[in-house]
Length: 298
Length: 135
Image (cartoon, rainbow over all chains, first blue to last red; front, side, top):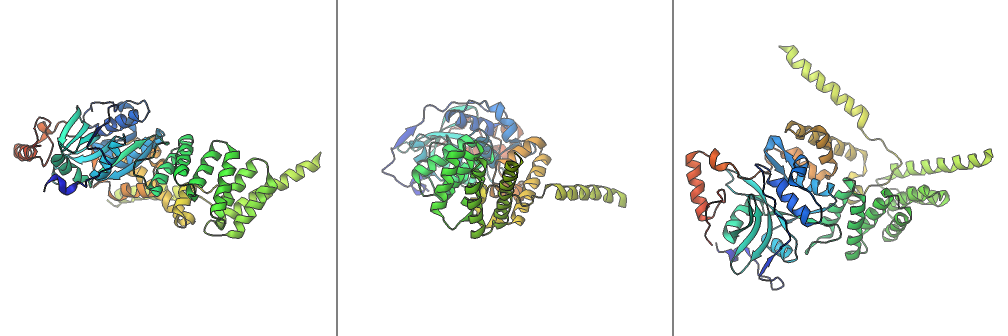
């Protein structure tokens, strides 16, 4: 097999590219996961040492770090973790200036030596891949060797990006999943930025408007949260979810009449979340009654 | 003999029942989370919420067994989606965990050392940093 067999020629891509500003951290024994993640995170603007990440990604019983632990840790630092696959995607992202964490098997399936490294460059003419790996900064591997060790992980790669920076080639669903991960990690500010970036690209994304509304709500920014849910109701007028969440925001703002209308509307629309919608309506009805009775007491 | 089996089993059952009693989420007036919006219909009903909860407990338990601090395991699980968790719950013993090849030279038996040395020279593997690969 020649390298050409696994390489699609792309005219849009330069024949070589190197990202200069990826810091190198030599790994301690078994700590290629924390080291690789630290390089990518520092590149993305998060100041962190590999030893700070060991606790978050390393699993002692496995003597290594799981892919999903890297993903979760990146999110806890407010960064997008976006998986990619294949040499084509790899070089496209490198040429866009995005370093890529790769999982490789340095040995064989019957003698696995799983290892993380950070690809920082390529040269299509010399047929070389350049990576920060183990104890070596800027190690150079031939396409042939790199392909052999990378294919054993089914070409698994991971981008670590600031939430305002989309991958060069990006799928809406994958981006939104990554941003939702930021929400789950409690990184509301980063999530807000991630959804806003999504909406610049896909302005009619119901999920992105919902996510923006939820993140703003959690930041206590109720006006912009309500705006986002309003947008979502316009995009999917028959979906009660947006009305339900809007009702909560309006209640939070003290606009109980409007909140009641929205909650009632969600209940009328029904759907799989109708139990939640009914509870929302009940709660806001209770709030309104309480407020009215309080008024009478004076 | 029987006691040796009954005791751990009953301890497990007591724990399991306690977990079920205290943690299964009930329907509340709440915001619909974005992950639920993405999952759409599936995660909507309560059964799915319970399944999600159990998956998280599973993974926390598994990670703890593999030496991760319980509090940290909880944190790791929080930032992952149900789909991302299921791969850990179902196949942790088969998942690749990158650790690197530092120490391999010492650890490998002679025959494996020689095989890997040759495959390294050919460029099929990259275990030994001192081997120059063909270009």
